[in-house]
Image (cartoon, rainbow, N blue to C red; front, side, top):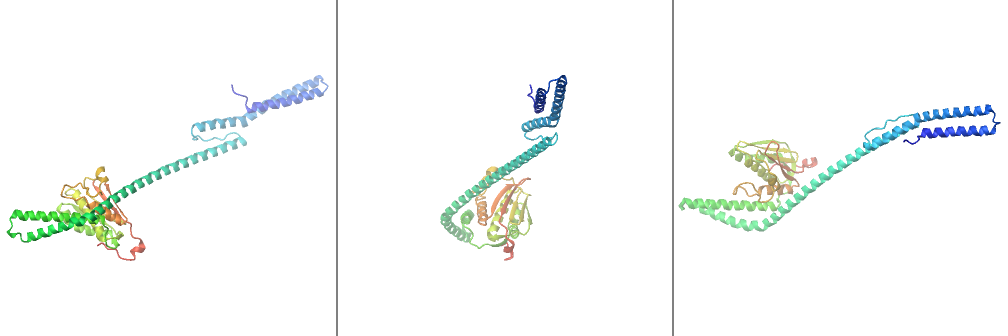
Length: 369
């Protein structure tokens, strides 16, 4: 059963007050029938006034407060989604408007808190990914440093005997007119393999030792054009179209070393592309990209792409040092070398080097080597 409301309590108090006043007045009078009738009339009027007061209070105060209370309970159960609808007059309506303002503020602050939480999660994910990338780059750098130290102690020891073998084989080939054809072919094989040894040891030395040239202004567009000229014969032999889409890209670095990077990337792209395919070289400010139409990069290959001696080429066709050397050169230029699969197939190798500032560009004309 519902407990007596505010209007009923106030009405009863009002009625009791009037009745007590009439009883006191009756006790102070003579108690004639006229006086008793007067008291009864006043009691009836008091009861009527109490009833009217109860109805007025119920309509103007109690019912609006009850509705606001019910809305507050529904709002809490619906996570503050339902707005307050102010009702009643004066203070009751002002209370409803204040509660609606409070609800709207709570909803806005919750939305802002949710936005901040989402932004915080996004930043944490970005920082975590950046940290993982930095750790991977550090591990790669450590591997390259270790190989470089190994190369410093081994390359000269291997290169000198290889040079002797190559020189003696060359002398024998110059006097090979009296030798059988099989012996001449054997000498040529010896010379080719000795030359290959020198190439490998040279790549090892370049991997572990930065270029001795002083850095200067270089235009990656000029690097791309020079590389295309070097690789065009190999592209033609495989029937691969070599395309250039270059724009001025001034950076600071060693033009010869950057041409070596570009040539390694273009040569790999030509070898990866099918016959009749296309290799595209693109330069934008601070960036050089080489795109091929090959099979792309599997996750296993992508994870080890820049490791020394890792190659997917058949035995005898690659040393696994080209990309490692290119990675080290780009790293020495404070840049990055990354690879990704293209949406339509093939792969893209991207070299990013800090672009020259306008004040640097005015100091000297960029050169491409």
